[in-house]
Image 1 (cartoon, rainbow, N blue to C red):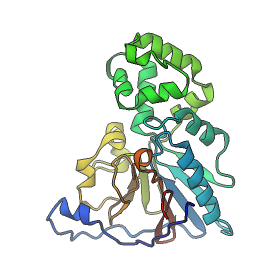
Image 2: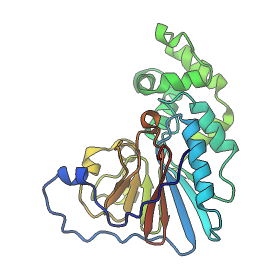
Image 3: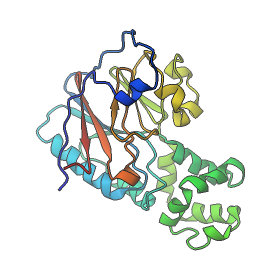
Image 4: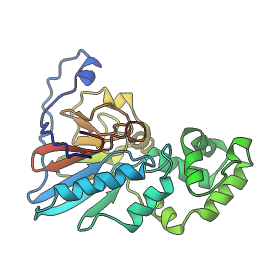
Length: 270
């Protein structure tokens, strides 16, 4: 039985992150803050794990029972690829959003790669098939048994375009690149340190890793992100990483923010 995991971790640090650099952190970081009577749930990378998303949605609904304030859920992107049920994950998000919640859907690098493939199956778009795109195609009933035979990429793209519901394409094309609320900025991969959020390049928002995760810079917001997998969620003064590798570990993580509090809800915990 999946149980609710609650850990109050305001101001906590990660030993792994501390080992990345010996530089002493002397900066004054942003104070955690969300407006009063407001609760925010932020869900990490799903990667085609419909089963875990359904479980986490149920946990969130149980957690907010009796809460009378406004509720919002922010999804950090990478809904597709790797796991076997990419289409079904998008179906759920589009057709069965959490009742009584505002919703924010951020673009992940995997969705961006899929859109690139649909626009240009040759060139950079073709790389999508090598890091998860094949299983996403299969979830739409595309190219099953033929992808391995190096079928013509234009043919594969055309078949995917034919079977991709218009609602899915519209959903992918209207995803945000980042979202801010209170003292937090939510983004798929991270930000380029020392660059304002308005001046960030899309490539960094979707793909950045070490330059961001190893930085101790005091950003203008506490940055909440996915993309870079860690065995445990990382709650640091300048960033919070919640990609816990759900498609492999069975651990899909949601960060819960309310006032100055930060806590976690997770599947796969006893």
